[in-house]
Image (cartoon, rainbow, N blue to C red):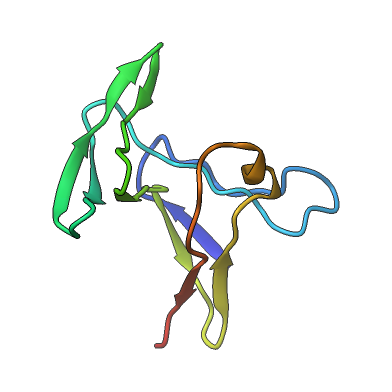
Length: 107
């Protein structure tokens, strides 16, 4: 599968360790970018990326859903599917993920 960068800060996915079942995807956003989010009543809002301790960051409020950009385009072959799963280490954080994301492209 071919992967293309749409932002210079994007990171091409790779397996973190030998024997990994999946590769890691990283967020790609810079200070000044606007992230698309939806509030608790499903109203579309834009969240401004700021700099915190020298790193680009943005604040997600309770009840918000956020579309986090990767800066990547995946060329998914015909009759294939791409799935995104939550890392097993996410359970150790206080961040809760509610969806598994599926991409399916039909040509």
